[in-house]
Image (cartoon, rainbow over all chains, first blue to last red; front, side, top):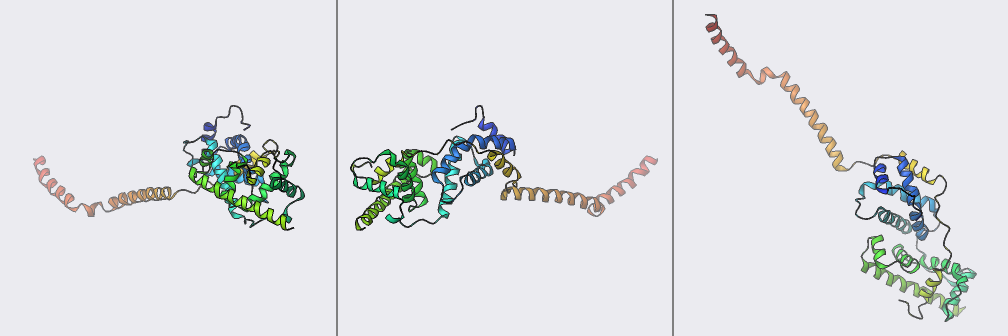
Length: 197
Length: 99
């Protein structure tokens, strides 16, 4: 996580509560890698990642009094970051669907390979696959996007996702099941469009 | 969930191999900017309890001052009986000592 050697988070946090600017700066430097990773994973379209990271840090500092030390501070910050990203995603309109014509050449190629080849597509298509997955996920609700990203792309466990989001494990599983069903339906619809071309 | 003909999982497996963004270095001046913005922001708004507590304390202090002021200015009015009794006792005791 690129932690600063020797940074005592608890001491730093106590100083932040006394509105010590130097401590706040040290804490930002310590937590930045964690926060930016979450922001990049869930960044809503057309939003600057630094702006969103700054907003998360402001929320963290404004609410330090609410942190009771029951979980590691980094976990608490992760939860603040995830909920801020979710709020931003909620503010954006969901895309109802994607059509084959909306896909770039690379995305169309990779989708064709996924749908019609029995073998696994070549890893050189990975970047296009990443773009395509991001597009397909824009048709999901923010909560479904979050679950799919953590579960299927970051390969986190259900327990980890439950801890990070504050949802129950059952809710995580139900959301994942529904979201995957929607994504499979999207893929089927794209396949049908391709056949009718 | 990894059925052989699950196209979504196939696509996700491939997407996982996509190159990750470069290491997360803190942009130059970012931490200073955030800390300065936080420091210049207003202190968090006091809770309803804190407002009530402050208001009550001020009220209590004001009430105490008023009680003392009233007691001081109206001492004679408030204790006429005691003053009268003292005067009568004084009148009785003084001649005894004068003898």
